[in-house]
Image (cartoon, rainbow, N blue to C red; front, side, top):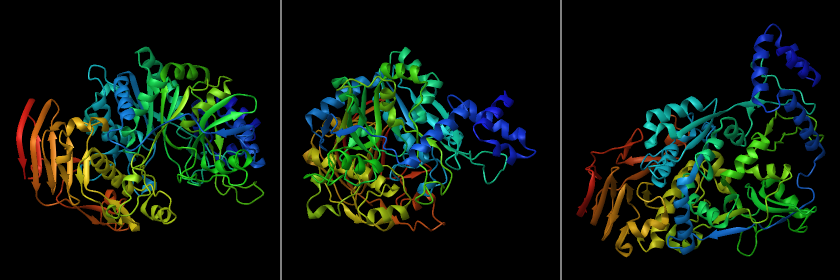
Length: 617
């Protein structure tokens, strides 16, 4: 077996690997056999595929040759708490959630953020200390039917697998059943040193091939290889939801998007936001080919302008319309598939997604790489698989659900600086130094700072739209760029997983006041029957199995304030340095768990229903 693989690789021009390994041939072969086993078709097939894609890259081939972009079929929801159609979609999505499976792509460490651990363990916001993974698990628990737990598959990597498992074990799976959570470890692929291509030798070990991640498109391969997708179908599940690791607002859009899929019969549905032209974000387009077939798919930002200039906009390319946005919505990398056709496709393809290569060339000759590259694949390219099978979906079976931002609600002078961050799409991707450069160019910074502030803004603006009196935001400059800092309002999933349920939680919204300096954290089955007046700090919790109805709330105490932190100050914890601030006072949580004996915490733990006349602090 090993000799056959060696011969096949030598036939593909990889003799240099064995020359480099010297006396460590066995070590090299062990790695090559692993790489061979993990790649569909084997390592020689990987080399051949790379050669073909590198030749196309060197020539500058257009992957969209013959296609004309058109605006995709979209359902658009405004940023409103009481929007009728969105409420109907959320209700349909909640009903269908019992037949869902969820997939979280979480293969990365937080190095790009300036954090040394796994990203999913980071606090999504430091007010409640709820981690990204904990937040997603809480949403699943809040939306699922307890009699039929919704499975969660998490794609990990060598870097994150053990740490993700440790986090789940330490936190008792964040309230989910252990057997409903499945970890799938993604393996890496060989790097390519040049156009021939020669596989790259690890500079730290001459008897190893340099490897890198293959991209999040491998999630489809893993769902096929593990048999999970088929198991879900056999169990009667109908939908699968894909989302990524550091957008804490994912589940504020997923239920309505699922409802749209149910009501429209979509086979594939992508969650999207309005996109600014020239932004470094993919666009969802309906690509119509000259042979008659069409496909709705994400087009990466580096292709958008040239595609538009070559087809429908030769003079202007990628420009904004009269509304200030591109005609093509921006991709959020949140996807919902109908499970039965998805499983049928996996059976035909083995879960393989079309690959691409993106070498960084040293000069215009396009012959030398600045650094080794590799083949990659993206989970949102699944529709291209259908095209490559010769089975493009019927028109109308692929849709896009667009969620508008709250910008129209922030046009008065009392609302602080405008935000570059969408209040329903705020992924954490960049460290503060890189984020500040992006913000200076008018580009969404995608920092942990903006991610956290977007949570507060989203909740505050939804409550304001409901009719509540929410104090105006301050102008914050954590990390060196201005952003609005709204009152620190955290509405955890156990309290309100759907914004359409806010009217049932606040029965007298016109009597609800939260001052600009306030912190309000709510979790559990709690209903406010009368006035709520918060000027300070309140953490209000009902334990599982407890139902509380509160007549009135009045809070006049010390506010929980943020203090700026120097991102380069190594004396501070990384979780604070990466966002540029920390809780100065009071301490709301310790090690990710709420401080329960503080005088600003009100917690109800006795099972059953409780009528509380008044809470006053």
